[in-house]
Image (cartoon, rainbow, N blue to C red; front, top):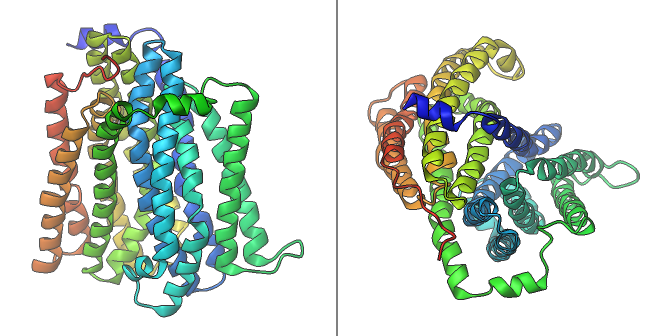
Length: 456
């Protein structure tokens, strides 16, 4: 087995993996830091503004996750078309991804425009927070179209091993968001200070800048992904749309269930007291950034797996899948050790923590380091291998069972029924990862996930 893994991953395989993974890793870090910018800048105005943008950001995070889920059908098809050297298929599947994603973006935008107070009301009963957050949601609703445009092109560029392009334009979006936040929140260059409304306007404008520069570049260069009306007409066939939705909808629901599960874990931790919730709030952005490299590697592996299946190299793809999963485990161990060694510096950045919460956060940090190692294998197996092979329903069912039927009920019983301390409740959050570790490993060995999606 090991000799086969080494044979099929020799040459430039790992070089290509890292070349695709690094820009995606950078993009993940930028995505994690985007909402952090709003919170840090609005933090100078007052607690109501922080709470409002925090709740609104949670709502937009769930819808963004949904749109990313919608693009997975395009990601699977585009990677396999590129592997089969079918350039027309690559362009048309990108056009289809954009079309379907834009329809879903329109639905979420309408939801934010017509029901903002109801959405805010799910997480807060404070009238001032609700009013501020509702205003933010209505203005930022149009950014869902920007998310749809950027996400659609990103999956196409990744499939072509050019993820650096979308990362570059995401960087332009982030920098313009920081600058425009400064101008509109605090009132610079003669612009009146608008507070949370200014943050919303800055988000819309920076999203527009990112889309215009990305699409402008692709169409100016007459890039393969610069699809036109003819390509859109070609993909408007029910057979193609239905195939796309069969691949995308299980993952979309999967992502939504996962995001809902994260919210449930926060609610459970809230039962243990304010300190537990504060420590968990500190862990969330730290964990997102710590996992960025593993996320990047998993998405890069998904591209290479899709390419190999499209090229019908079925033996190679199986052993390469085992190789990238073992590599992910090794990287997970290294990241966990490094994070544990620098935990003091990380926690020092959160100077507002009380002594008791700081001590609790240190215990959480140890649990999180163990969690990174536990997550490393299932993350690669699910995102980089099983889902990339089209095995989307298995991934959905496994997540639902591990998270909603085992992980969440166990943690809830420990918090509410047994009154366990926060660090032990946090440890129970990892139960689902342990279950997915064994489930994903078994499924990989069966080879049932190796599916050619572009053959008639």
